[in-house]
Length: 210
Image (cartoon, rainbow, N blue to C red; front, top):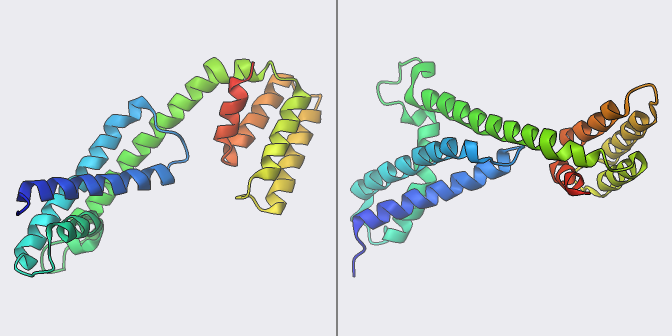
């Protein structure tokens, strides 16, 4: 039983979109927000569309080969479609065009702009949460507990080097002991430092404490 060609195209598009979703999730330094989903869907549509185009082209070139089954069509199209569009191989012509104005370069700039919009939406949502819910709850945590929890977290994070852990713990203790600064500023400095070292989950947990 042969698989409908449209179903192969749809499968390639979905797989390419999944690949991009994983890539985006790994690359983003902030969680996705609802306001950022339209931008994510727009980016997904680009990769999905290029996978469909690649699937049609590959089928035209290799459709007669026995090994080029629908499964291979889906996998190869999902991998090569977005990759080709991102590279200058997508520039059609004699090769004399200015690379800056080629379709691949234009796509890279557009993709960067969309990714920045996704990141900005996440940053705005995170800032709003911190202002409305996070900091009011973090203010209720005794400073000594905030310092101890933060330093324990830092010392148990594997991604930080020993030197970075030492510097971060020293920074937090110095900030907490700086009685010349308002306590609110000291708390904000500690929270911001946790953000800077990738401790958003820790800040979220602190912001849920009563």
